[in-house]
Length: 417
Image (cartoon, rainbow, N blue to C red; front, side):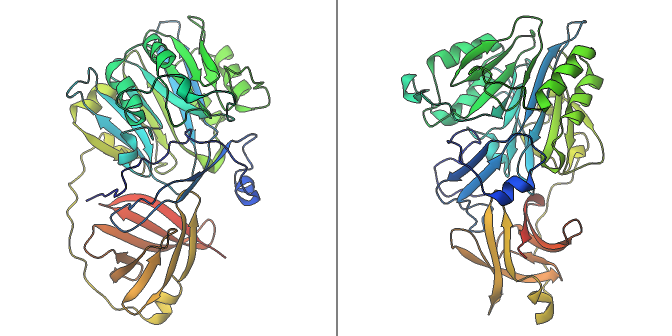
């Protein structure tokens, strides 16, 4: 069972002020012409049922989002999600239920659970309302308390928008009254609807695009009238829209030509008129998968991993947990796994010997001892459906440790030199 034993939420990428990041991370993402970096400190979470906690979350997001109306009236939108290397991404489907008017899907990092509240990265509903976010510089002089708190709390704002609204104007009216009480001051929401209306919403204000005009957003504050000419992705997307009819081919070109190298994790293209959706993933580079919002909703409440996009259109057998077969390993084999591993999202993971096997210590100091393996590089968390694998990363020639829950990959961490 997937557990989160602390009741407080994991932060969305735009819920806290920005800070300068250290040189190593900036160099790692030097292909980005401009980035906004986040450092989060938040309560201990017990994740993957294995005493794993995320204590700090360093995020660099340079997302590109585009919305446009074609000459035939069809409405198109696309988005590149640029973020943490070595962290899983999920598509989470929520059919209509209870007080919801509309079914929808959301996008999330690390866990499907983070696709249920204010950690949603983006989403689309069955009547063609969609949104995504761009990180921007912290907006100063804005007090979230100057607007009303949503009665159901910050966690329910984004599900409420997707589950009950069908127009950009409804979203605008909502944010004229309500605001996230714990943030939304360092990002802007790019929202679009099936009627071809587009808007940017941020702590700097609200800007509704002129009807029939396209809208492009990257990582500068549009409502704050920040100059975006320095962001190379913005003029690139503008030029492609000026020179080409909005259609699938053009949206594909925008995603491809504004890609941020290794840090672009996935792309999604939506025809809001027809409900058709195209997904592309760094985690599953075999090709593009086309689906439809109606088809997704017809399959019920499910989450899909960007590591296996074809599971959106192909059946997969239900995961059956089985007790691993134990084998013995020599000390020489185990020695090569020992050391400190790091992931910018999850923090450091320390692997060291223990009298009962191999011990993992997470960034909060909590430890767990892995059960004896069923293969030379494969271990398990006792009494949990969590698999831990060690492999050599051929790109970096570093040892890498990978964590899986119910056969879903969750994250990787690389061994420090």
